[in-house]
Amino acid sequence: MTDEHGPEQAAAGFREVYGAEPAGVWAAPGRVNLIGEHTDYNDGFVMPLALPHTCLAAAAPRTDGVLRLHSAGAPGGVVELRVAELAPVAGAATGGDRGGWAAYPAGVVWALREAGLLAGAAAAGGADLHYESTVPTGAGLSSSAALEVATATALNELYGLGLDPQRLARLCQRAENVFVGVPCGIMDQMASACCTEGHALFLDTRDLTQRQVPFDLAARGLRLLVVDTRVKHALGDGAYAGRRAACESAARTLQVRALRDVPIEELDAALARLARAGADETVVRRVRHVVTEDHRVEQVIGRLDAGDIRSIGPLLTAGHASCRDDFEVSCAELDLVVESANEAGALGARMTGGGFGGSAIVLVAEADAEAVSKAVTEAFGGAGHRAPRIFPAVPSAGARRL
Ligand code: GLA
Image 1: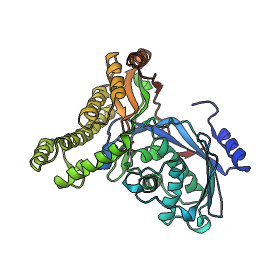
Image 2: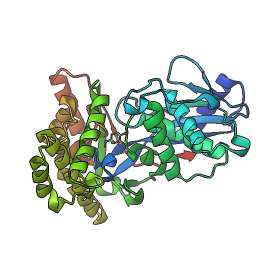
Image 3: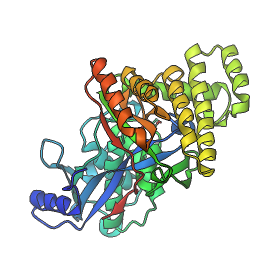
Image 4: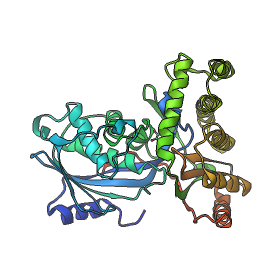
C-alpha cells in the first residue's frame, strides 16, 4: 500500500474524471484464505482473513439510469452503460468470462436490478463510480470480489437499500456467476464484506453462519506471509468449473446434497462406494480432498480456539499436499514456495485461493520471517522463476465507508 492510497486521493480522482464531488468513498479488501480450499462450492467450511489492501470506490448517485465507471488502474477511460440495458452475455454462466474489469461492477448493478432492489429514488439506478485499488490483480487475492463488494457497499448506502453485508456478498456472487460468467463460490465476497480487523472469519458456506476467530499473530510472535508467485496459468478458468462439476457429480452418486455431507468417519466407505459406482479415480481423489479439507478447517478452529496459532502449521502444509495431489490445483511455483519455506524453517505453508498460480501463505516465527523470505526468493531464482512478491498478511477490516 502506498501512502497515497486513501479516501482523499480517490475523491480527487473522482473530481478529475467527473468534474464533481463524490458523495462518499467506500473500501472493500482483498483476502487470503487460511484453510478450506475448494470447499465453498461444496457447502463446506472456509477461513479467510481480509488484507489491508483495498479497492476504493468514490461514488455519486445519478437519477437518469446512466452508470459511469472509471478505474485508475485500467486503460480505456470511462465506461458508460445504461442500467436498464444491462444483461448477461448468453452462455456466460457456463464459464465464458465476458472479460473486462467493468463487467464486475456492472454485474453488481444488474444483480441489484434483477433482485427488484432498485426502487423509489434509486429506480433508475444510475451512478458515477471511480475506483482505485491496491489489491494485486491476478494474484488469487480476490481483487474482483473487492471491486464487486466496494461497488455493492457504496450503492447500498447511496440508494439507501439497508442490505446487510451477507446479502451484499450474495448479490456480488450472483453478479460474478451469472453476469461475468465465473462459477465461483461465496468465500471471496463474504470475506471482503464481513471480515473484521484482527480476526479470521470462520464461515459455514451452507447457511453463511459465521464466527470471528481472534487471530493475533503478533501476540504469539508469528507472522503470516503472502507469497505472490506472479504466475497465472491459463488452464485455471476451465479447470475450476471442471473441479466443481466433478464434486457435484460425486455428490449425486453418493446421494448427498453436497460433499460437505460426507463425514470424515465415513470417507473410506464413501470412496469405496464411488469406486463401485464406476467413478473415475480422479473423482475419488477430488472427494478425498474436499472431505479432508473440511476436517482440517475444523482442526484449525479447535487449535485457534485453544489460543494456539503455532500448531496449525502442519495442517496448512497438509492442506497444500491435498490441493496438490488430490485436487490438482497447485503448480510448480506454488509447490516451490511451500517446499522452500518449510525447508528454511517455516511452521507451515500452503497455496491460497483458487490455485493454478497466484499466491501462497507461509506461517513463520517473526524471528525467521526474513530468512524464510530470502530462501523462497533464492529458490525462485535458482529455478529460473521471476522473483515473487512477499508481504505480511495483517488481518484487516471488511468493507466500510471511509
Ligand atoms: C476462488 C473462488 C472461491 C473459492 C476458491 C477456492 O477464490 O472464487 O469461491 O472456491 O477459489 O477455495
